[in-house]
Length: 301
Ligand SMILES: C[S@@+](CC[C@H](N)C(=O)[O-])C[C@H]1O[C@@H](n2cnc3c(N)ncnc32)[C@H](O)[C@@H]1O
Image (cartoon, rainbow, N blue to C red; front, side, top):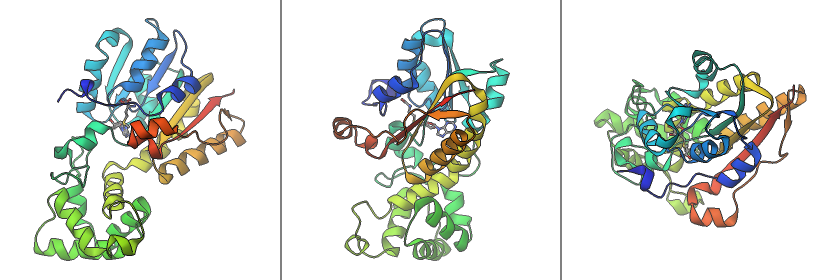
């Protein structure tokens, strides 16, 4: 599938461009290149003498972005890696300071929409969920081998799943009979474990939180965010900005805390005090945007 021609819409693009505010000749980082939507807009702004470092864990995302950004190859570095290694990545490119950093967290519509990647409980596929295909640990390994207690903690902490103990117990019982191999298998186990949707009093599918939790654990997402944020402030030139789009409260909490700490230490000023949310129109056109929260900070000294 040619993702560059599908309906991928970068989340909060207008707000990102206004507040990240890339300028001609700037050196920018897109730590979550994805399908290259935000990157394309940034590249247009920074012009032919600007530079963009585009990072993604997922080689397939990088390939798609490369295709989309073909007119800009001369000024773009495509890096397969984890944004947590941003300092090393930049130093290997001979870059010491950048004017802007964008992190648009989570997975892309292409990753979610490809059943073979195993991210979605709405499609039948292998229980994979790895953003980085070279990661030896997939969702299959975690779900079929972690002790019940550890599974329950993952479901509680990364999914904020109220029924974490029941789901973990049912997973362990089920896998003793036969491995949980597919997204449909895991969805069925969750449905078996939790009370009926009406009893849960929630509008989201009962498997939503479990899938989110397992995905975060497989990709060690929260750890990567915490690690990269510690490094970002020193990599920004004075006046440089960092923009982070978070999609759930666990991510946003880490960003909010780090931004506050920097502000308290006088290292940044918060460009917006409260996170920006997408407008009504964007949410209607792109339901994925609904939970987005954008925070921006500017390096002061
Ligand atoms: C929401 S998408 C980004 C979409 C992109 N802004 C666009 O406009 O097309 C997030 C991307 O970041 C990648 N990603 C997530 N966590 C990462 C990490 N720790 N290091 C590198 N890439 C990561 C995912 O593989 C995915 O392709």
